[in-house]
Image (cartoon, rainbow, N blue to C red; front, top):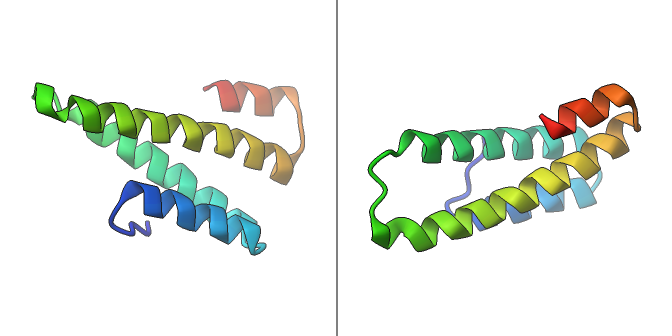
Length: 89
């Protein structure tokens, strides 16, 4: 998985990939990034209060990632009952 330092930079890069026609790689990179980022926060049980701002910003970014993933998945595969269940999952 391509990680470009800042999570915001990684998100922007995947949007650039999509915009330039690299749709499958963009979707796959964003999916892996979102899953990895979410898991890393779930694994951090010792979050300090000073980390709360970082946590909030990361969850906002993850929300944007999951919205984008749903849009991209619909664009790549069309709309179907299976897709809706996949996106909700």
